[in-house]
Length: 90
Image (cartoon, rainbow, N blue to C red; front, side, top):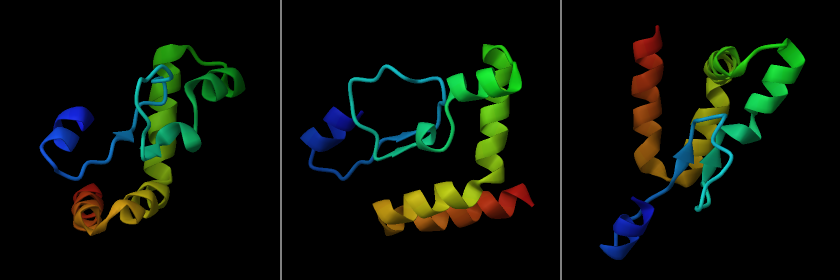
């Protein structure tokens, strides 16, 4: 998608929200693995892969401000979407 968007002259930022996605051929502008990784969770909490992913995503939910700050650094078009997501969580 990044290659396509770049080819047609559109701005695009890749955001990785998968804590288990450790083999990519592209650079993410924002990566959940900067907050938490699957390996860290599995080791610290003695969880398997499925439990580790659920735990990591719950950690992301508890640190939503981290995501919002990261997206706001990418550009204004993401800021409104974060507010919509926050409102729907309430």
